[in-house]
Image 1 (cartoon, rainbow, N blue to C red):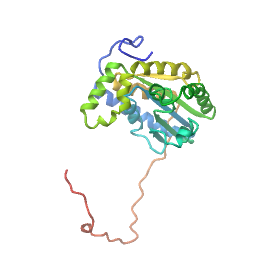
Image 2: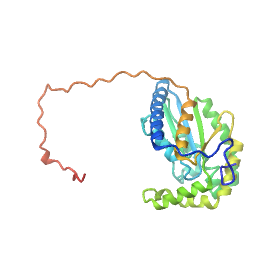
Image 3: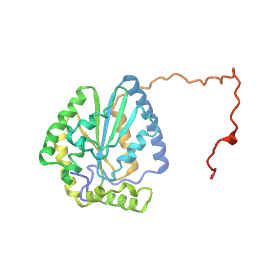
Image 4: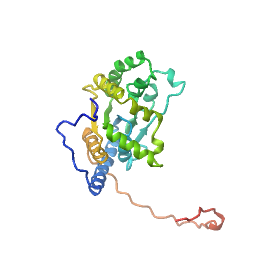
Length: 273
């Protein structure tokens, strides 16, 4: 069942919040390891897909941001698709996601993925019953096919309680820099909390398979969720330190004369700070 007001995590008692200093120190250490993983993926020409799913305001975006913060965007890409176009609606359901799968030496993070069909589309009635059940039948085979082709597939579900989601929603309403994150769909997810819980349980029943299991992240504490998720991700792909060539800055070429254009002819922005 989804983490909600009546449930507690098995074997977990409420913990004190970790200090900001420890969090930043540990995050920096893990981000160094992520850079090592990135170089390993590039050198070994691995193909990695990571799916982030879960409740609205569960902390998926914040965790993705911390993962990618120090990585090369040419190696690690984030895919966050909007509504399908009229053309895409006529395609095979998985088709527009296949377009974004990684080539050798790449890691692709899906901020929501093909599991939209089992979540928001199912609950909000954006797909037919036939389309929904066809997805549940096809999805495990689709992921097995990706894995057989050599793609590493890792799936995370961010679980957040009803009270914590409400607290984050209210904080977003008050913060003008975050209010854009609240959409009509987010608000409806509050009304349809139980429907989303049932949809998630049904989705897990069909798609939590041995070859591609779901890994659930307890996301009520954002800092712990980020650290735990990154730590787990690093454990999922065995990697080694890649010895990089030492970089030596070349000397400036002074073999020709150059007269710089007068700075007064350029338009500089006002220095307000």
